[in-house]
Image (cartoon, rainbow, N blue to C red; front, top):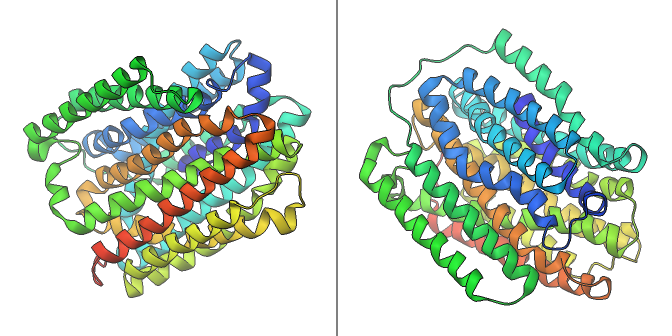
Length: 440
C-alpha cells in the first residue's frame, strides 16, 4: 500500500501545481498537459511489462526496484531547471510507477482469497484514496509557501518506508521462466506516445492538420503491429489475446477505459478551473478535492466486501451511473460561485459512484486469473485505466487552452462528455457481466 500510494500522491499533487509549474518554467497551453502525460505515457504503456516482469523475476524484487527508481526520478523533478528536463524526469517516474504498481497489487492478490481478498483490495483502494486526499491540500500548501519543487520531495519518506517494509516482511515468490515481450513493449509505448502527441496538438490547436493526421495514422499502425506481435507470441505474450474471447473480460476492459478516462479528465481540469477561473490558491484548490478522496477512502473497503458477497455486476453497473450523475452536476459549476453549494455536491456524488466501483472492479479482474498471473492481470487493468486518463488529459488541452472567459464553458462541455462516458461504462457492465462473474 505504501508503494502504490506513491503513484496516487504524485498524480493528485501535480494537478494542483500545474499553473505554478507553467508560470515558472514558461509552459504554454500545449505544454501543460505534457506535465501529466509525460508521467502517464510510460505508466500506461509499461504496466503490462511491469506486471510480467514481476511474474518473471519476482514481485518483491521488482516492487523494490520500481520504488527506488520512482524516488530517484522524484529528486530529478524537484531539481529540474527547465521544462524539458522536468518532462524527462516525469517519464522516469512513470517507468518506476509502471514497475511498482502491478507488483504491489499482484502481491496483494496472491496473498488472499475469497471474501478476504475483497476486504484486502478494498483496504488497498482506501489507502490509495487516503494518499490522494493528503496530496492536494499538502501539495497546494507547499506550492503556496515553499514553491512547487517541494511537492516532489513528498515521495521520498514514503518510498523509504515502502522499501524497508517490503524487504523485511514480504516473502519473495517463485520467479517464472517465461521470457519478457520487449518488442511488444516498444511497439505499444511508441503507439501510445505518438497518439498522445497527436491528440494533444489537436485539442490545443482545434485543427486537424496533416502532421496531426499522420501522427494518428502512424499510432494506429503501431497498435496494429503490437496486436500482431501479441498474436504471434500467443500464451507467451504480455497481453494474451485469448483473454478477449471472454465477454466479461472485454466488458471490464471497456468499463475501465471509459470510467477512468472520465475521472482522469476531471482531476486535471477541476483544480485548473478553480485556480485560473475562480481565483483559488493552490492550497484552496487542494482542499477543494479533499471530500472526493475522503468519501472513496471511507466507502471502498465496504464496497469490496459487499461485492464479494453479491458479485460485481450490480456494483459495477450502479457505481459508474452514479458517477455519471455527478459529472452532469459538475456541468453547472461556476468557478466564481460558492464552493459548498456549487462544487461540492457534484464532487461527492462522483466520489460515491467511484467508491462503489473501484474495489469491485479490481477484485473482479484479480479473481478472473490464476494466482501466477495476478501481476499480469492487474498490470493490464491498470494500464487500461491509465490509458483512459492519458487520452482524457491529451484532449484536456482544449479546456486548458481556452481563455478565462471561455474556460467555464469548455469545462462544462468536458463534464457532459465525462457523464456520457461514465453512464456508458455502467451499461456495459450490466450487459457483459454475469451474476457469478468475479466470484472465486
